Length: 336
Image 1 (cartoon, one colour):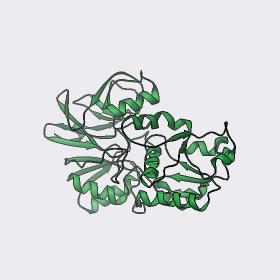
Image 2 (tube, helix red, strand yellow):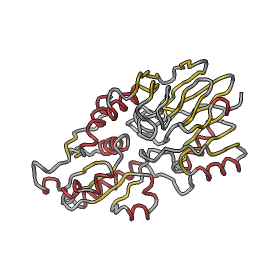
Image 3 (cartoon, one colour):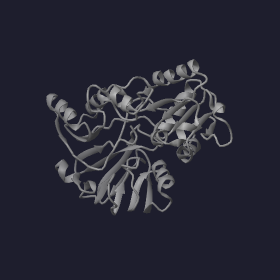
Image 4 (spheres, one colour):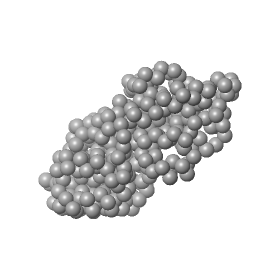
C-alpha cells in the first residue's frame, strides 16, 4: 500500500480513505480523530469524535457538552479498529491529553504527530517516539534559529525580577490551555508559594488540570474590584496574551509585561509586542527536537505540516530522507 492511499490531504483536513475518518479536520465531518484540545485542531460540530478522555473533557469545557454528536475515549497504547484500519493513540507531550495518532493498514504505518514537544513538562505525559514508515511532523519552530532554553531557567528570570521589583506586579501572557498551567506549575516547582493571580479565562481549564492531579497551588482571581492596586504589589498574574492589550492589565501596579512563547526567541517580535520580559517557553518542539524525533521514528518518509515546512523538508533531503510539505490550512500557533 502507498502512504498516499492511507492518508491524504483534503480541504477538510487529513483524510484516511480506507478508514473513512479525518485527523484534526478544520470543518465539521462525519468521523473525526482529534490529537489535542487547542481550537485549531479540536473543532465542534463533528458527528463523532475519537480522542483521549482529557481532550474530550477539554472540548466539553470549551464548546459545551454537545460539541459533537457522539464521543469515544481513546486509551493510550490501545488499538481501535476503524473499518479495518488499526488506530492507536500515543502521548505527544504537548498539553494535557495530547496524543499522536498512529494509523496502520496493509503493512503501512503512518504516525500523525499533531503538535508535540520533547522538553519535560509536569502537566502532561512525555512524548513517546513511535517507529513508523511515514512520520507527519509539525514544524512551528522548524528553523535552526529556534533552540529553546531550559524552561526552569526562564521561570527563574521571572522570580529574580519579582525579587528585584517588589513594588511591581508581573503579568505573564500564556495561552489558556497548556501554557498557562505549565507556567504555574513551573513557578511552584521553583519554590514560589504565594498565590498566583489568574485571568477569568484560565479558571475552568486550570480547575480541570487540578482535578486531574496536576497541582497548581493557590490560585486567586486577578481582579482589583475588591481592593486597591497596591494589594497586587509583587504579585505574579497569569492571563491570556490578549488580556494584556485591554483595560484589565491596567488594573495592576506598574506591571512588568511578560510573554511565555517560543516566539520570544525573536527579539523584534517581543519588542513589537511591548514585552518587557520575554520568556522563551514553548509547547512545540524546537529545531533540535524536530531533528532528533525524525531520526528516532526511523521513518523513510517525512510529511511536514503547519510551520516552517521548507527548511525541515530541505534538511530531510540532505539526510537522504524523502520529505514533502503537506500545506494543510487552518492551523495556527495557539499553543506555542
